[in-house]
Amino acid sequence: MNDQTTTYDVIVIGGGAVGENVADRTVQGGLSTIIVESELVGGECSYWACMPSKALLRSGAALSVARRVGGAAEAATGELDVAAVLRRRDSFTSHWADDGQVGWLDSAGIALVRGHARLSGVREVTVTGTDGTTTVLTARHAVVVSTGSSAVLPDIPGIGTVDPWTSREATSVQHIPESLAIIGGGVTAAEMATAYTSLGARVTLIVRHSLLGKEEPFAGELVIEALRAAGATVLTGEAPVLAMRSADGDVVLTLASGGTVTATEVLVATGRAPRTDDLGLASVGLPDGGWLTVDDTLLVQGDAADLAGDWLYATGDVTHRALLTHQGKYQARAAGDVIVARASGRAVDDSPGAPTSPPQTTPPSPRSPSPIPRSPRSGSARRRQRRPASGSGCSTIRSEASPERACRPMATPAWPGPSSTSTGKCSSASRSWARTSRNSCTRRPSPSSARYR
Image (cartoon, rainbow, N blue to C red; front, side, top):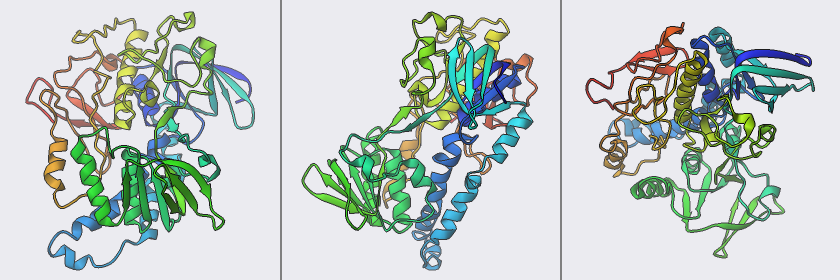
């Protein structure tokens, strides 16, 4: 494209899992839709997060389980083939090529333009390609920001000089380091500590407060117990205050307690920031670089006159509601239905329980750090983790082809989605269907029938 203007009904900025789901929903509702993506179509989850991380974890988890089962334990006498684990991981990321995902967009009738997108006015997005050419896209109905989040480097003197890993490097590595220091106490830190320990690295996990602090206390305690049993070092109540590379190339972290941790590489997993710093938000009266506040229809909130007209939406991590892929995809489906409804002139009432209210898009959201390392007494604890609180039942649908966990609140009123114009197999007006992949459906009980989990 060369300095041209093109008009679509909907423009989606960001071609990750969340953006794909928005576009899928709006296209099924009869609206022309284009995705703007600056990296790989499929986004973080497909290439640097959910899929490669689980692929790295699976082989070690399978071997660990086999070693605890009589009969299998006698056969499982070897160690992991690290090269084979990495090859399997590479296959899950399609070797970081997005041909398959691009092919799906084409089959679904979703247009794609590659380049960096910036808002440049009301319902207007300017895309700059890698060759410097620009394309101005205009939207008849909506622009949706689905740009996700990126890793934050902690405020540790020297950390930027030691070439620290983030989750991207940790999930795409081609050689396992002899030793790895991990700074952080969340799911990414716990999963990567588990994976790299199983792959033979000497792992030191440095946790400022408690591990998995957003979960029930017993969850972090069991993971620490299992990590230590597997050979990892876990330091809680510790924090690095200085980072540097030694003369021999190792990373040396000085701790607040006065001790040091030395490792071949260091991974920082201390939080996420919205990818909105170069998005042109200021052009429509919003601060650059911030999280986007949305209502329950995913409409961006703000006092600027340019936001009038119900046209700017946000889904996924940038809303700062629940930084989880499955929750972002859930928001995407809700936003897509809202956009279609408003484009066709149907009223949307987002008050709780209203007949035309969209599905709930606020936390609490189900999550499962999976697989986590297991201690001998972790079975009953994991069952307690999976049991929903009273009144918060949901449906979990998983398969080898589609590992997505889809969850909807019980007794959600029927939401009038794009069923009247949909050409897809799933009617979004019916709660008896759950979309478990981009273009397939799985039958499940309706909320009005038996309770479902």
